[in-house]
Length: 309
Ligand SMILES: NC(=O)c1ccc[n+]([C@@H]2O[C@H](COP(=O)([O-])OP(=O)(O)OC[C@H]3O[C@@H](n4cnc5c(N)ncnc54)[C@H](O)[C@@H]3O)[C@@H](O)[C@H]2O)c1
Image (cartoon, rainbow, N blue to C red):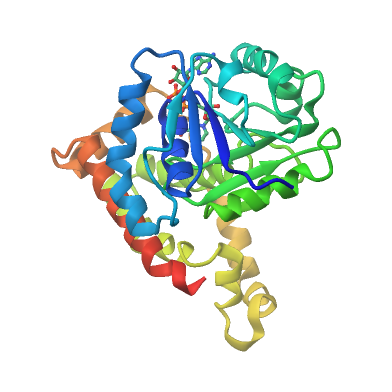
């Protein structure tokens, strides 16, 4: 397999701009297409803002924000690309039209990976004559700071394509998982949805304030989950006997809690309550200020834990 040096980014909004910054930090040449006339300014501003964090996380030797070009069409951006990350709006007709434009001009060795959060591989494959080199590579926002990519292929995907994609993502510092069976939300968003469902339920029930429920997460299990996953952590929760001993000891407790978990809906009343709780917790800080604090902590946690992995 040819080394992946040239990356094309299709769609440079929230996700595409962040991928662009990461690909540059990994020493790749990046070419971007987005029909928004303000794209060049927006993407350059995004990269400038992201670069200090990327430096802290460790740039590759050849990394430079200058290895960036902009193209006028989806077809021209993929010419000469070894790898294409597609981040166009989450609408099937737009995705299909994009694939229709690029398929005939795509270099034969190139892989196309879609960032889609909610569309299935099968639905997206319908936009291709031959979807053999097309996969899902779902990132977590923002991709330049959160390592996870959820990879999906199926029987229409060429045998080598998932390996090539995975090797490339690993090379640029991503952590990948393979989705073996398509489900709405893949894995990570389902986990988030399960936890948030209970957080919302407890807020409605008045178990604690929205702020304290959030605090219980970041000061408790959230911190442990940044080191290991929930099943491994419970393997460590009952001494020498490991997970088996843990399950023997706590199975009735967990089965009881599972029976008792809430099933809320995000209706107007619930949303109002959550928004009021968030206003209290934010204490006048804007979402931009909070996002800066979040990103500083994400970088610090990863810089500290990277050498231990
Ligand atoms: N936002 C998230 O948290 C998140 C997380 C993971 C994955 N995703 C996925 O990433 C993809 C993009 O989402 P986003 O949040 O960046 O959306 P966005 O609206 O911020 O960006 C989409 C960009 O695509 C551009 N665009 C519109 N038509 C285009 C075309 N024909 N060709 C190329 N570009 C075009 C738009 O100008 C815009 O800049 C979606 O599939 C989404 O599901 C989003």
